[in-house]
Image (cartoon, rainbow, N blue to C red; front, side, top):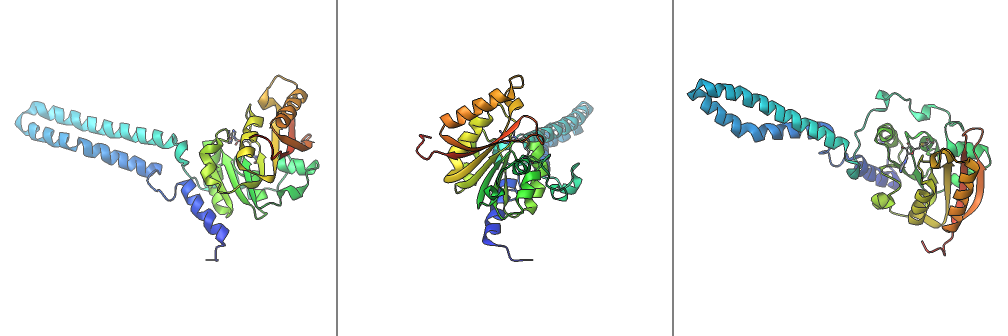
Length: 292
Ligand code: SAM
């Protein structure tokens, strides 16, 4: 096995925590098995009682089969509950992992990095200096299944990638496992405190691409929390997600105002057309004297 760099070692450990490999308990299979065992165990004394009683009168034998059924039912119920619970644990950051080969989509690394599929690539086509990506640490918000992350990763960046959708995370996890300096974070960017413990140092670059109404607010709260004073924030704004009926130009003007009011200086604004309709990129610096 090749020697791992210190960076890879740190990320390896963190990844285990995030993907739940360290705590094997919450894997759905085991949870289901345990729950089934537990349910069977709990009903065991009852079973024993019924068995004894059955010897005495035939009536009780009916009870026995009824109890067997109820044991099965209890176990079934517990199994269902366990599966439900496993699916409902975003707080623990646990998502069931699937093999890349079992998924409907191809490994993003097998595709060329094209502007039509990646906002960052489109921005580079339309004038964003590629040098913005030459950083040590980056927070990427809205990783989806990891198409852009996989291509950015060609550069040696410590990359913290946040994704809220469980389904997307199932695609992203097996890929991230293959990318030594990418840490997948299953979380909601609207609540940066919930994953702050996974980002030990401030980052040099924050990129956000999420389809949310309050894209600007979410971006600002992550910048104020994680961006280093000399860092750069890149917000990809999709006008139709902010307000599907308003004029995109008005949405972009609002976003500009809000960013500046909240202490950001816009250093570049890039229209992503023709690659992405109604999308703009705002490149910002934060005012270090702003009262965050
Ligand atoms: N940037 C990705 C790429 O180029 O490959 C595509 C991102 S896709 C347009 C937007 C993603 O943001 C979706 O996967 C969605 O689940 C995620 N998302 C939406 N709201 C979020 C939130 N509050 N926190 C984290 N991710 C979020």
